[in-house]
Image 1 (cartoon, rainbow, N blue to C red):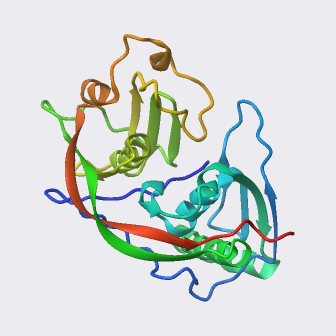
Image 2: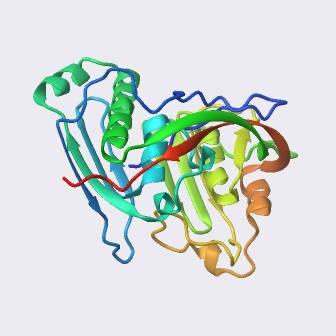
Length: 272
């Protein structure tokens, strides 16, 4: 699954907790021994996916844009990645990268969090080497949404399962994870085009399902596989109404300082 990192907002402020590296060059870390990179040839009804275990030195991506790769490598939502040429949002790539067996052995000895962080640095190095990626970070005053509790409070119950699920399409979001509301905030950021700061104070694992009638002007989301029943029902609720009615949450417009990652330079990848 394509795991999306979540941000944790603090009540009463629209301050991002994002702290990516200030330069693209990663800390010393094992690198991939081989990496095959190809421009993806679009197919009907396809998905975009990243496979990356924290316990081995392998990384695979199918139909993934450079912006999504940067998101994975720096642990940063796409809404906080700024600048760069238009093609980093539209041209997708297939990547199959592997490290040698010694790196696999090292990764197996790490915790899940340590392995994930190391894999991210390996992808940072891959982007710097093959895509010539250069970045820096800035704090900018931007329009944001605060995700807060609606009147009556949340309308979902805790469940006890493991793993993280993020499924989204046109007019539908389903998330489940150790901090489900924060995951939902990041998915809402992609839909609204603004940073969404989780100010609900609700933590824990939930199965959150949201369905709404999307704006006709909105293009299908990345990874959109099917149009939900809400999207085909002209009487379906708007995103803002559905959020309150189905989950007991609402979005409030604000302005606040947001830490963003600026793409200074990127190139199409070197040949294999």
